[in-house]
Image 1 (cartoon, one colour):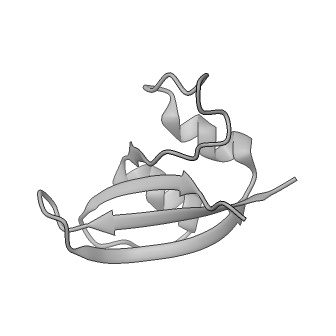
Image 2: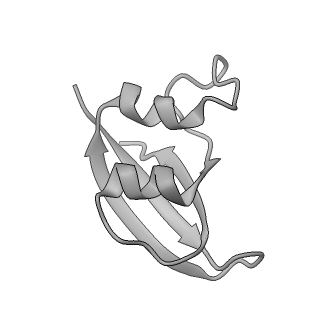
Length: 76
């Protein structure tokens, strides 16, 4: 089963959106990038969580610009 997620990157230290992709991914694959967070209260990943650029590259399969990256589920 896959769910739709948004992976987005903002200018480092800023709020300018410089990257955004909507991708269907396995929820377990996304949750594996969030090991530093307690997501028990948000199993559907409705909230945005910061991820490393390496995790963003792994999820998107793309070469990415330097940015602060976040991931969250897209609600239907």
